Length: 466
Image 1 (cartoon, rainbow, N blue to C red):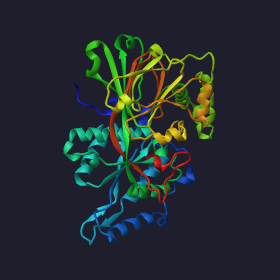
Image 2 (image 1 turned 135 degrees about the vertical axis):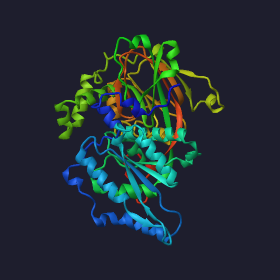
Image 3 (image 1 turned 60 degrees about the vertical axis):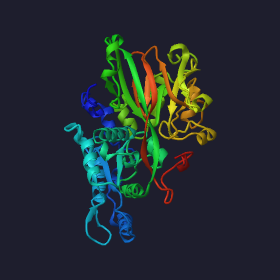
Image 4 (image 1 turned 180 degrees about the vertical axis):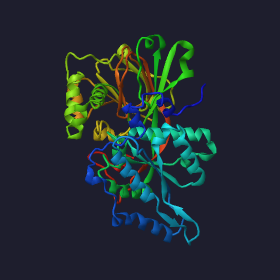
C-alpha cells in the first residue's frame, strides 16, 4: 500500500479557500468574543498560574507537565487568533526552576498550525521533537472538534513511525480543549465549556490543563465504499477528515474513503440542515446573520429549505432493505464474544445517528437519564438512535430525548442513493449511494477539568459521565 499520508497532505489537494479545511486546521470562530474580550490577562489574573508552579517547586516531586498548545493564528478571525496565541505564549513562556535550584524549565510552548500549508509534517515533527525531550507532556488544542481529530491522528501517525516514543497508551499525551470552534461538543461534554468568551480566560484553561484528570475516549472509524463506475459521472466532495484508501478496493472497481470520529456520526435530516447552513455562511447574508446573533434563524430557514420540516411527504432514508446490520454490545451473544451480526429494521426513519458522548448538535443531550447512566465514552459501544419525522427532530433540537435502538460495537448498511452525512459537526452531501461501515478504531486519552475548582458543565452534562 502507499505511504500513510497525513489527513492534511490529502487536504492540501483541496481548494485553499475551502472553509471545511480551514475549520479542520484550527480556524478560530469569533463566537461571543468581541473587541473588549481580546484584552490580555492582567498580572493579578495570571498570578494563580505562577502560584501553582511555585507550590510545585516547594513541595518537591517531578517537574509539572509541559503544555504544548496548538493554535492557528493565520485563519478565521485573525485579531482573535493572534490575541489567543499571544496570551498562550505569555503564559507558557514562564520559566521556573527545578526543586532545589539547578535546571530552569519552561512551562510550555505554542505550535503554529498554519505552518502545515508549507510543511505538511509540521505538527507530527513538533510532537516527535517535544516527546523526545519531555516525558510529562500534555496537549492543549485551540479549535473545534475537527482540530482535535487532526491532532489525535498526528499522534497516532507519530506513534506508528516512532514506536519507541509511545510504547504504551499511557505514554500518549492527553489532550485538553480550548473551545474555539462552532459546535464544540467534545469540549462541552468534557467540561471545557461551550465557547471561549474572553482571551484572559485562557489563564483558567492552562490551570485546568495542569490539574486535569486523564480520561479514556473511544475513537471510531467510518469507511465509505463507492462503485467507481457511479463516481465517474459525478463529483465527489468529502471533508478533510476523510482520506482515500487506495489499496483497499481498487482491484474490484471500488473506491473507499476512511475517516474517524469521537462524538457522533449521522445520516439524514440534521446533516441536511447543517450542510445548508454551511453553504449559507459562504454568502454575505449568511455571514451577517451569524455576525448579528441570528444564527438560529439561519438554521430554521435551512430546515425549511432542505425539507427537514416536512412530515408526511418527505422521503425516508434509502437504506437497502430497510435494515442495518450490527453487532449489539448489550446482547447475550456479544457478551460471549460472538462475531455474528443481527439486522435491525430502520425502514421508517429519516435520520440515523450513532452517539459516543453526551453532547450532540452544540450541546443537546438526546438520551434520557436512564440511558445516560448506561452509556460511557469508553465502553466500546455506540448508542444508535433514529428519528422518524420532523416533529421528533425538532423535539431533540429543543432539548428533548429519544429512544436508543441498539448499542452496537460495529455497524454497516448500504445507501441506495446519495444522502447527507454529518460527523462531529462537519456535514457533506453524497452524490451517489455507498456502503457505510462503522467500527471501533482505538482508545485515546483526553483531559477532563478538575471538579474543584469546577470546569464548565451545563444541564445534564456532568463530570460523572467520564
